[in-house]
Image (cartoon, rainbow, N blue to C red; front, side):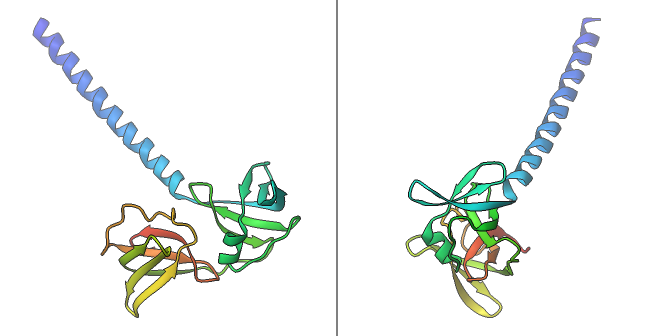
Length: 168
């Protein structure tokens, strides 16, 4: 009787461990999808502590530096109504005046290098080597080895606003 109970308990424990591992795997996949996505919202440009920021409809504020707006080829003033996209780090990666649509392009190629000092990405594409300026150094550039196929998303100014491994 003791051996039979030990076998049953062992099978139950093994089943529980497998079920837990499957649930944990599903949960982590869900988190990865949520983290890798961008969040879009409507907001208003405001002045905050002597610099520009964007206040969302929910009251959250996001810093908007003059350099960042300039790199995106835009100038904003307090009171402008805007459509904003932030990345998983809550950094603004795209901003337009409300109602204006962005025309982003995607370029895929093998990663040649990511310039840390001058903030650019160099890809080997079918058209040859091409370099693109990075909007933010944090744009998912860490841990991607040279030679990896990546796709960069470029805003209207030709600046990298997002980068993904693989083709998109």
